[in-house]
Image 1 (cartoon, rainbow, N blue to C red):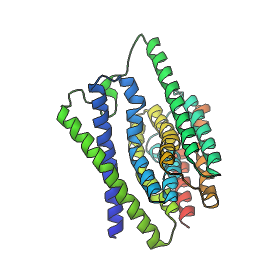
Image 2: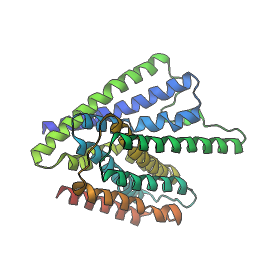
Image 3: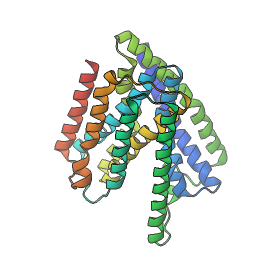
Image 4: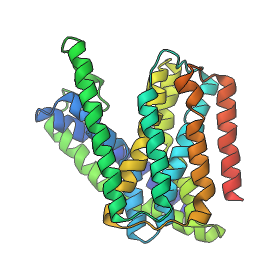
Length: 316
């Protein structure tokens, strides 16, 4: 029982520290004059993925590659099936008026490249490839955002619309957020990774399975909370875009950065099914992205049920 409580405590610390780091970094960047647009494309995107990144780095450093890789693959599957499925049961997400085709195609391409690289294990070179892809995508997003801004007669992102932004936040509070975030992330990651490894040993299952289920589900909670609120507010573009962006960062940034520090060997026979499910889940988004289908209650039930079936199959 204690090990489960420690895992839960590690997860809570991770999520809170990640949120504090985002708030502190965003407000510091705005305070020293970095444009809000650049902050939204970089600091917010990286900051919200900080818990997953710290878990993967910690797991790789402790020579537990299955946990690091399972965290990313499991999170991407959970993002599509659960993070979109569960909110759709509560309220239909109308995607017909929102164009996410380009970002979706990029995510799908990154997913296939990720799986191809996994066949021989992730080396330092693979990490550079993934990070180069991320840099090119961020550059393209920045250029497109600037073009839209120009077409909108110079309208810029409102600083108050940025996640965690508070123009009135005092300097001492910014420093406190940064300090707590930077201290809390490695502490939470250490607690969660160590507890997850102990749970795997106690139940006689692999660390990869724990990464695919417990750790992946836990680190997907912020996306789930964001998507539930977006669905209830009828902001389907936010919901779908949040999932696509999160999956893209998981593949390119988290594994890319982790592999720079330590190569990640891949047990393909053990993970082949999970890679296939991740790709299959991504392909399920085609009707919503290209054919203007709303994600209604029936689809929500189907997606959520598929995730439940996947968890059962992984655990058994």
